[in-house]
Length: 491
Image (cartoon, rainbow, N blue to C red; front, side, top):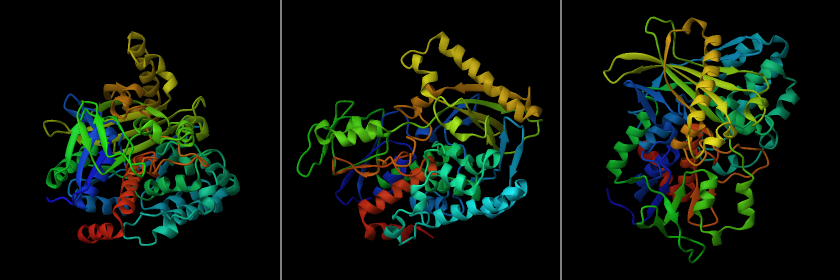
């Protein structure tokens, strides 16, 4: 297709970068996507053992009933990304109690938890009333929303931690953990997360959790198809090594790449970790305040993952079980807290021959300190560590699913260092923790034609990362270009 003459470079080939590249190209720009890893996709990538596909980081999502479906239409990949049935449960390690969370939306979820914790019925309904209000006033949960400026204004829930809100409601123990369990899916503990940050993620998963047929491959294949149509240049195994000069109004329009080539462009969108953004920017363009902002950011947890194939004769249905070793989510989501949270996902897949299989993936929260000594070299002691930690997760799995003991063919294990191979430079699961009172790195950067997007920008996870790209596109391309694209593609 023809281009407008504006050349945009997108740095980072995860879901945020792929979404941004498609939007810019659909608006008529020439687009180059740079990905430092050998393949695009980031945590959307999958790997295979014995012909069976397994997820690396993207396991499930919310939003199929609203904004995700809209974004897929606008990106032109809704025919590729199909919902698969899924359900959700919570298992409390200390008590052995199980919560079988219902489908049917947050109203059904509120009714269920009110019946499970009748003495806190009013508190449960108060929480979900807040959750719905937060989403109603969140920009871009409906791509046709024209009240963007009003919804960008702060409200009381932006200025209150989730712990403070739970204290106000008077909830504790397992109910507190159940209402806050989506923190395991955004990575910021209740003592640090704003109510708003938590509710945006919690609503999407509580209202309609789902898997995607073919997992992240569906998104990546859809991107490749549309990128070819739109003429997007995709370059992998390459990164910006240096921005040699800042000119004019503190802009940079030329970069030296790691392969020695040079790239000229009009603007750049950085869908990478804030620490990687800081390293990329020309030193003369970055003041001490910006360096301090990035330096004060702390990563969310990473995951240690075990993956296997379930015996065809065993009973198992597609579902997520959140195993919480303690109902204190702060102990799980803060380094050194001593608690662990493990997501357990049963999924229906097809192997390389097209035969139906069921996979079991369990991913437990870990911190860099556990593997720091092997950061540069993975020796025999590292593989002994992997065996020990894998056994810990197996024990959790069989406690939750005793009927699957001896019925899972475990095929792969991966540590935080493995995650780093897919999502450098740290391998953390949800980017930096979105701590109340700490400003995020989103939008225009100290180099004025550079813009930050990605998982650390607004809302973590696949859905929030895509939303950040849509919001950034709307701000940079302008309202006319945004509405032209929406009206042309959104049914």
